Length: 203
Image 1 (tube, rainbow, N blue to C red):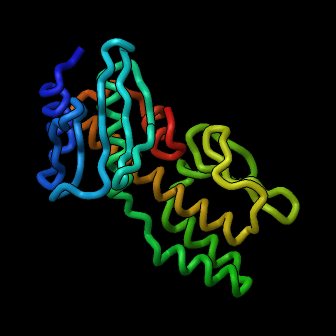
Image 2: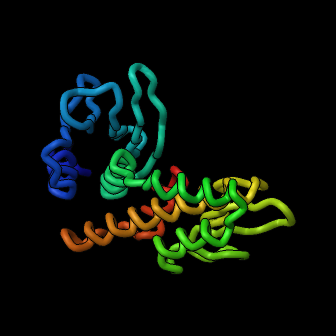
C-alpha cells in the first residue's frame, strides 16, 4: 500500500507538469487541479478498510465517482488518464468543416477530412474492430461504437461523422499520451484499460 506522499510524488513524476497541483485535503484525499485552486478538480481517496481507491470528479460542491479500483498503480493511471481529459485537443475547426460539407451534401469531402487526419489503425467502417472507433451504417442511420459500447446509436450520418472524428481525435491523443508514459516509465497498466477509461469513462 502506498502512502499519500508516495502517491503524490508518483503522480507528479509521471505528469511532470508545473501547472498541475497536488495536495492533501482535510478529509485525507489527494486533490489534483490546474493553477490556483479551481472549482473543478480530481480527488483520489484510499479506503483501507475496504481495500479500495476511489477517484472523484468535483465541480464546485458536486462530487461524482468516476472509478473505483483496488490497486494503487491503477488508481494513479486512472487519475492521470482523467486529468488528460482537461488537455483534450479536439480540433473544432475540422468538426465545423465536416458539418458544413455534410450540410451541403458533400459527403466525400467530409470523409476526406477524416482520412487526412487519422490513420486507419484508429477507426473502422461497417463493422467493429478491437480498440478502434467504429462507424456502422444501418439503413439511413449510423451508430458509432468503441469496445462494444455505443458512443451514439441510430443518428443521422452528419452527426455520426462528427462523433467519429471527435473520438478518433481522443483515441489518437490517448495513444500519444500512453506512448509518452511508456517512454518515461515502464507503465504497467495496459493501453486497452487506459483507452477504455478515457473513451468510455470506466475501466
